[in-house]
Length: 357
Image (cartoon, rainbow, N blue to C red; front, side, top):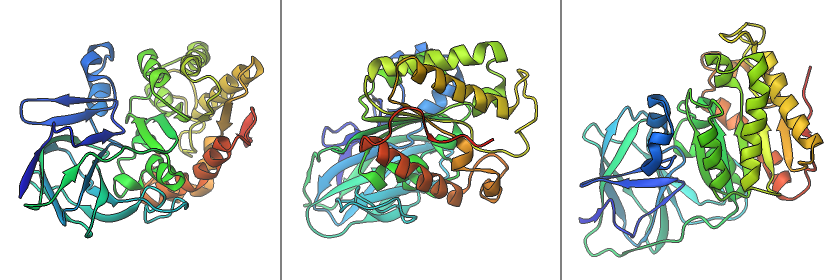
């Protein structure tokens, strides 16, 4: 087979904030790797090096695509998406405007993977694992097959931010995370800044969100703050206001959807390390949105997390906090129509979904 180096210009790394090219490998980063020293915390940096939502995009007429990667902790397959399709919803099969998922293929113990492709000229997206270390060594196509740079995604740009519930380790495959289902269901170009355990309203991460091209932003705020006790009752609201104001500075007029924590029955009234219950954290997220909209931001919107996953959906939480595959599909089914409405310009300020007491 014909080898394609990981740093070949024929490959587009869609969804990556930056790409690091080593002597024999390349890997996607979801923060600027050349300035990673400005993002303190080993856990945050390790999550940023995991390629959640990142796709290798190329054009080819090959019938077989294979590759090798250096992997560690990869527990989900690669998904292979071919060509485009018509408008559709976020179905459980992951299909939609972004093309058809033609295969989910495992990464072998040696880092090898291979997939069969349909005949003819086509645009191929290889969705990389949403969790674990993945350094691409090379791809390979059939001898005699052609390969060319394919256009990246051309739809409106969706940027998501959040915790493990946005990185979605427990999703069945990379195209079945809720950000991927929303993006593919609406024909959006996804950049996912979901960092498991690390959504702590970091000011430098807010600056990355500010500077990324975006037509809609979905920010899931609060659960890591509660779990780690990042902020007290005095400091949380100012931190939320500053984070959201920084994001807004780079995106005037762009709808920003803030999703407060989903229900977690054991945590609702349990006091966390900083003296706040999960219910209090959720209320402060709502207060931040309310204050900013009252002070002149009509494009900031609140989606109460209990409308995404409420107490009645406890069976979808595999461990009482993290959804399983069905839970992430359900999250997408709720978020898709809200994002569709925002993009259509029908959401005007305030709360898109009212908070439930």
